Length: 405
Image (tube, rainbow, N blue to C red):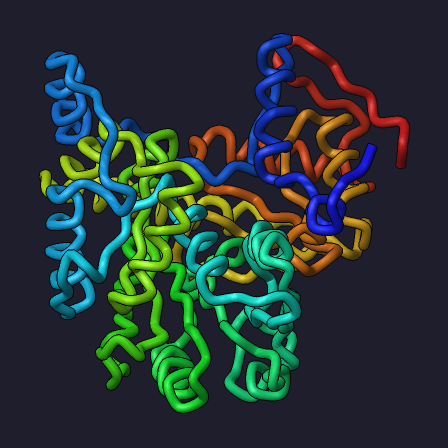
């Protein structure tokens, strides 16, 4: 069978594959604890459900414009003004089927084959594959100081004549790191000066902890013309716990949005009207659910850190936001894929191997679940790895006997 070069270069989504495996195990009645997911467990806002229910009951479910319905665009405009202190126009906004599609059509609109796209590592698993889908070259950059916080010199020394774009994701998936305000200011100004596209993936920007404030990239931009290369991406998926609704958006210069709209129109047409109505309801509605989720996640993070700090041989950096902890397990196994499979097989704990995020020896542990899942999940991992743990462990009524240490 003949497969294209691009088709052969792209692997499956590791996160989606893990969710599939977890679902199969749960369906079989296995006592699985899922610490690998990126999906809040709270319910979607009532304003979102009410909005979509009204339209559903009308029976008028039709095509939508390729760049999104006017009410959703208006909601995004107000959202951008409230959280980024930047007034934009409808022509600056495109609604997509998730932030992932918004990033994908942006990349397709700006990249030519062999162009390079830089992003700090660890990174979201889809960035390299999305760049490859455009025939371009992903360039992950690990901070030289060994931290999760990139410095401008880390970025600058990887910029070449082929560099077309830089992607910044803060708070970061998988580390939860919020990049310093000074770095955001510098990267915005640097990209403006160099004529490099800057994609700000802000999908977690309201899920931040310890009294931190959101950082607006627009505070440091000076070019707001149709020559601007700043692209802001967001979504209802994380902050509103609406992952299944698949609605995200991008804000950029009008000409770029026009090109992105043309591409999206041929890919998928406009996002489903029901989903757009729900997203509009969430953005325009009461915002207490976002703060409630943020507080829950902050508490879950604190519990996770307590459990990990009592775990000898690992290293965990306290996350600033989002709902992940990126933990160094290299003392036990530097092959993170092998380690993740081992934990799933032996103690039925699902984790994400760090190699998928560009840093082997680490596991991404999610704090999306319950306190009980976090505590028991880490206890199972410790029992499986720590030679000083008891030889037996009960999972429900099932007794496990450790015969591998």
